[in-house]
Every structure is written in C-alpha cells, then in structure tokens.
Image (cartoon, rainbow, N blue to C red; front, top):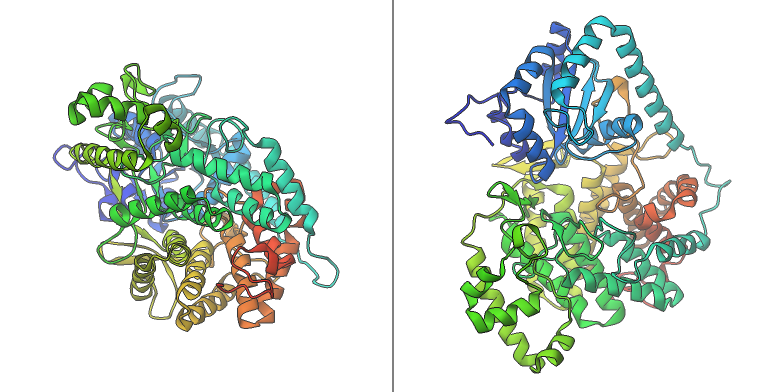
Length: 628
C-alpha cells in the first residue's frame, strides 16, 4: 500500500475507515460514498465505478496492488468513471444491495465487490476480483474499462435499460419477501421444520473430519447452536456428537491459532488444517457461544477450554484501552498471507533446541516438507493429549506443563515478527456479540473477569455510540462515532444486554434491552409488520432493503431480533413483543421450508417459540428461561 512519501493523497485521507485509508495514496481519484461523487458523475456524464471491500480482505489487497496502485488502471478510471470506495463493514446496507445485484448478474459474489453504476446509483455490470490484465480465464480491467466507457457513450439506452431491468428484478425479489401476514390465518411453522433442518445437516456432515460439506469449511457456529438446542429438545445423541466433534476439530486444527489462540476465518481444505488467516471479532464471539453451550450440555472440559482460549485472545489482542473491542486482524503480513503464523522445522528447533523442538514438532504436526507454502507449517494437533501422552509415554500433567512452556517460548519468538494489520474500528453489532459471549461465559465458567469485560464494553457503547437523541450509531474510531445503526447493531447489542442481565441480574440491562427493542421497532418496522434492514434509504430509486432471515458469517440481524423479542416478551410479560416475533416467523415459512439449513439461528428462535421450557439449556423445568 502506497505511502505519502511516494504519492499524493486522495480524498480518502479524511476518512476514518481503515479500509478506505489503505487506499488513500492510490493514484485513483477515489471518493467516499456520498452525494458529492454522484453529483460529479451527473455533471460530467460519467458512470460510477464502485469498489466494496474490507481492511483484512486478502483479495482486496491483491486487487489494490495489482490495479489500484497501478497508474495505467488509475488513468482509465479517472478519465472514464467516478470511482467510489466503500468499507462493507461500515456500510453493510450498500454491500447487501450491490452484492444482490452482482449475484443476480453473475451467479456469484465475494470481495472485493466491483460494480458499475449509473449516476442514479443503478447497477448495470458487476463482478468480484478483477485483475489488471486478463488471466486465469478472467477479463482484465484494462479491457473492461474502455469497453464499458464505449457502451456508455455509444449505446446509452442499452446501459440504462440494463440498470432499470436489474433494479426492477431486485425490487421484485424484495417485494416477494414482504408478506403481510394475518396473525389469525397462518400458524407458526411446526417442529417438523426443525427436524428437516436436522436431517439436512446430518446428511451434509463430514463423518471423517467433522463440520458440514467439503472445502472450504467455515465455523458456522449458529448451525452448532441450533443442533445443540435440537439435541436438548429431542435427546438426539447423534446431533450432540456432531457438534462436539466439529468443535474439537476446530479447536485442534490449523483454523485455530495454537499459540496465540483465536479462530481464523475459515479452512481452505476439508481437514480444518490450512486457514484463511484473518481473525474476525464476530467469529470469536459466536464460536465461543457455541463452545459454552456445548460444555453446558455435555460437561466436556475441552469445550470450556476452547471458550477460555477464545476469550484469552479477544481480551489480550482485540480489547481497546477504552473497553470495547476492535474488529479484526489481517491475514497478511510482510506482503504475504499467513507469514506471521507459520513455522519451518528449523525455525522451531532454533527457538526451542533440538530436544524440545522435536517434541513440539510432533505435537504440532511440523515436518521438513511442511503442510503450507515454501516448506512452512500451520501448527495443529492431529492427536488429542491423551493419545499423544500414550505415544510419548509422558503423563498428562507433565505434558501440559511442557507444552505450555513451549507455547510461551514460541509465542514470544513469533511476536518479534511483523504482526498483521489490526483493524481498530469498533462496530456496535460485533461488540454486541462479544458482550453476549463474555457475559454467558462469566456465568457458565464462573469467571467474574469476563463479566467485568462485558460491562466495560457495554459502558463504552452507552457513553460513545448514541446520539443526543438516543439513536444508536454503528462505528467508532479515533474519537468519532458515526453512521446510523442498522438492524443487526440494535439486535446484537440487545442480545448483549439480555446476557448481561442474566449473568448479573442487574435490572438496568433488562430495561436497556427493552428500550433498545422498542426503538428498533420504531425505526425498522414496515407497515406490513416486516423489519427493514436500514431506517434510511441510500441506493437506487428508493430500493428498500428488507431484513434477511438467512444467516451469513453470523446469525442474521432478523433472527437475533426475533429471539430477543421472544425472550423479552416472556421476561417482561410483554405480549406485543411475542406477537411481533410470531409475525416475523410466519413470514419466513416458505423460506424455511425451501432451505432450512440456511436459517439455523432463525430456527433456533422458532425452537424457543414452540416450547421455551425445553429449547434452551438454561431454562428450568417450570419454563423459567432466566438463568438457573
């Protein structure tokens, strides 16, 4: 990424987003999203080149180096287009809208997201990563940019028609989701929906390596939470064992940082061995919640240990001095992915000596050949400690002491390497998730320090992330809170407040959860009872974004909102909350039937709605779903 000593800064230098600042010295004449850019596009009669990504995205870095730092590409962009850069983590509303356009046009999506728009914000051409020059069967920017400019100048009607048709199709898709549900005429989906999701997850379960499907494998902890609740309800030992095996595989695999702890984004293979190395706060939070619940249900100590290690990473490496939590750590350092994390055998022995180095190599699966690039190794554990002690003829206590000393020595040596970039923005949505996880961890693991950390983060958000009018904001960085919050910000923070209330029985958190939920309904509820994702529109022709129930990397904001409404309805004896949740559940009936495994946290809420006294591992026999 170019620095100020080599290139003049563009407009992005005045932004707070780390992602936008990474592009502040590109020769591309970038604009942040805003009317200034679209006014320029209208005044100069140019289409818009929209690039959406995030600061810890490996392929975003590759596209920047390949194209946006390149003067030839920049000259074309500056001559023919108005270029806009967006941080998807700050503006998930824009990302969702234009990702839907990309998927409709190409059948696929991903980041960086590249979309060409009319000055009226209508998409007419889209893709993901695009190289400078054609390669690997992909057309390059050097070909695409002149051709689209030619279309714009010489075949404008065709371009405008394409944009109109695409926006019309997207509106039609959105309209289909906006079902006006009559409460009396439609029943809640039944337990057969839960069973169908369980059957589908079991059919895609990897019997050899655990997890679901093949490579790449994502943590998807909301699927595990669903299965845990389903197992509790139905005494399903197979569902429980699937969860435990998957969490064990992640805990012992290369997807988990064996030295510094914390979960990487996903595994590129089916063995959980080689990860995509970025670390996201939300993965830590929801995976910790799954591990805690697995421990509560099974009593298996490895599940508690997994959660503790995740919290250790979050509290040591992602905690801000003010008490909230940073967003993510990059996959790349020294210009390559994974460099900070991987080891060659000779490096291991240089740090530890021949004898301890050889033991560490056997424990962490390090070989001369390597399992990663250039003879390097991703540390992992192919044997559990019981199997390893039997093979090495060491007692368990002795092994634990030796491995901890080895881990600390390797970690100390690793910390002398160039560390991956830290995205130090604070996002309300993701902080709500980690507050919920820490509060639940405090209760289950009897760790008051976790509760104290969760309270500090909640206090920071209360003090810094609300407007004077009491409206929630999404992002904080360098003493600036900005961007009106979206549905997932409200829902996840409310989840955090509910867990804080349960962990410490402080009424202020329950009251704040109620206040936040009422504000959420005021801002996002549509006339037909559905919830929108955003309170204000910012896209083509008032293209309103209805909140999706389908989960992504985290439980969807809608599914979390439904669970919150159900729980608060029960805790506060507030019938209007329960009715609103049931309306939202009924509206998703067809989606749940069509693809139940895409909605597992929503189904977790349905599970609660159908029979709360049995769905939740913290509910007592008389139906009280506060903490035991």
